[in-house]
Image (cartoon, rainbow, N blue to C red; front, side):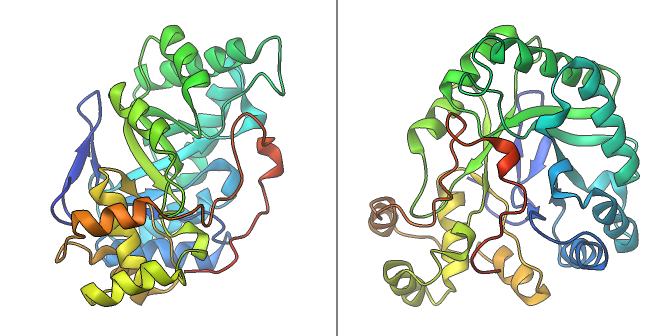
Length: 297
């Protein structure tokens, strides 16, 4: 587990990823995203996560430039959207993201959602493989430093690992108190993948949970800080989001306490809480655009 805010996770190709990222999901394009990214970088974050589907890549790039932080000191992740599946479309999608971000390279590029048998029963595997070939081409050309996926499970991972020349280094999944999909997480780790947690605060839904609030009070921390620390103690990389500078800072101040083994087990045993309901096998990915968390954190 990382020990401080400047520690990193190491990917399967040796690339190092800052151990806490700043998420920009559902942060509006324009001044809000630009200001948030700038403030996050000024608060010490060096890992910024966005996606084509978020519609805010240009503003993320503007915030990076306004921060004054050197490009080489920032780790930028973006994601490939479902409408761009396939080899040629993927290459164009990477170029579009680079142009919008105003960057020469992307540090980590992810397939946002897998193509699955439910939606494409005859050719889902080939679609994922063709998309991945586009990833590999741009990686070999130096446009991307590391490749990964998001929201994949074993039925999608196993074929991709067989078809891929360059193995996925990351799986970014929903992971928070009340929803950990631990079997999937452990399987990915066995494949040598780093797990990243989107929605580590449970989209705000877990922040009023009595158990978590009691544990937070015990350690003299906020419930959000307990959530971030819990994710880290499972050796998972959290991507907390806030539009408020004071909360950005607070969400990173999680290295001066440790949740006890007893309390970790209590959190592990929480009933399902804050789960979005999205699974690759039954959630059409294009329907996810426009969803907003119940409470901004």
